[in-house]
Amino acid sequence: MTLPSLTHNKKDISRSLRLFKYLQPYWATIAAGLLFLVTSSLAGLAFPEMLGRLIDASKQDNMRSINVTGLILLGLLTIQSISSFFRTFLFVKAAEKALATLRQTIYNHLIQLPMHFFLTRRVGELNSRISSDITLLQETFTTTLAEFIRQLLTIVGGLIFLMLTSINLTIFMLAILPVMVIVAVIFGHSIRHFSKKVQDQIAASSTVVEETLQGIFSVKAFANEFREMRRYRERTDEAANIGIQNGKYRAALSSFVIMGIFGALVAVIWRGAIIGLDTGKLFSFVLYSVFIGSSIGSLTEIYASLQKSIGATENLFAILDEPAEPLLPVSSIAPEDILQGNISFRNVSFSYPGREDIPVLKKMSLHVNANQKVALVGPSGAGKSTIVSLLLRLYDTSGGHVYFDNKDSHQFPLSALRSQMATVPQDVFLFGGTILENIAYGKEDATEDEIIEAAKKANAWEFIERLPMGLHTIVGERGMQLSGGQRQRIAIARAVLKEPRILILDEATSALDAESEKLVQDALNKLMEGRTSIVIAHRLATIRQADKIIVIDKGTIVEEGTHHELVNIDYGLYRNLCEMQFTQ
Image (cartoon, helix red, strand yellow):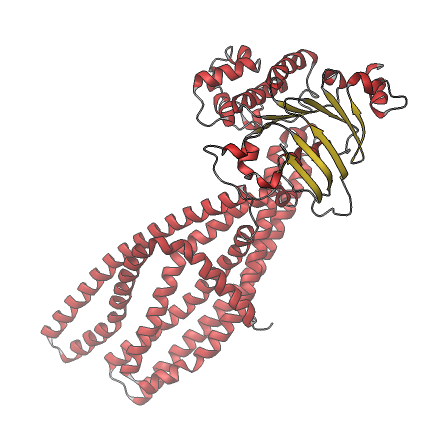
């Protein structure tokens, strides 16, 4: 085992200082808490001295001195009690506000990160960072830091009193201290390492819970309950094993400190008896030694807790250090940023991050006029959904450019660009609240009348008004209380309410039965009127009336034209796809 490097310690200090910036707005509260902390510590430090005087007074049978000393001790106890209350309250107040700010900062940053960040992260792990890791910091801010300062004050103040009593005996007592400090630092480094690994395993186990509950239908449909139980057991057992290793180091550190403390006390009493200290002074000296020893012992636990917190901050700041998208609230859109609906791809190439050697789009060029209805057709994996992601600038192109109204997409503010587009996907995600809240997600300040009108245009009002709670019906987790067709129509109502300039339909009817598809398709036809529409479709019957059909295969455009033009191309891919669907 080696001492931690200077560079590593500098990183720890840097992270700690960065963490403390969240406490800066509450310095007045913290300063008041520190004042009460110092008062409480000084009152506690005066106890051994006054108890020593009380013993000396009792030996001299001086009743006046005994009574005065007793009253002083009572006053010190009162001061310490009141100061401890306000110290704890003020530190908790500042810490809770700082942690609320930290939680908000982490969440706000997380939600603004680009899509490629989420490709390699799992929801359960990220959720654990915001919950478990910050819970560790909560203990640090509310209790550990205050205890750390209090124990330091006790050690420094106790040493001053010891030196005033007997410098020689103090030097003798402190001979073991450097050894204890070095051992504490070495063990603390190992404790921090294991604590970080425990947090990682807890995050992994949270991921299992999140995935299992989100996919509970699949778990039960495939009778995989015991498989998931085994997976969770493996993760939690691993966390427990690492925690046990961590506990072994902490136990060894505590044992060493206890042995050192009590060994030092025995030596101090022996040495004090030899040099002939007064009974009261020796008693005070021993009490101060106990105070200092217990404070040093507590520091090892506090140091271990701080190391755990530093381990947690590594994960949190790793998220904060990820570059976020340049997003701004959209209250109004500048005239020069208002879309007319013209779209151009010019020699666009793209590969997903981490898979740069696998091109998804290859120097693709296409043009869509304003108010045109354009369908994207092709086999699975051809690159259709990738085109949608590039339109929304969820990813940036690897080569070439995307233009809106002959203006590079990067010249538009990202939030303004996305706010003028709406997507109706195949797998609709609904939030677990009410139907009203889900439709209003398209326009935050929409009135209930506007929401009802949007629901009518989406052919959703006919089933909504039959529900006992109407718009205020809870849709359940991911909208599971509703059928597929109902979820789709709510998603369409959301898009209607947004009034987008560009509408993107990503296989919006492919998973529906015939009756639902007719209702949804009718709603989509209304929604597409008067705006640029990009339709991704596997069911080719739904796009026969498209103004233009673009056929994509292996990241390139292989055919382009109307339905009538494309079906007349001998051996054409579109014609082949149509024959496979319409002859079945």
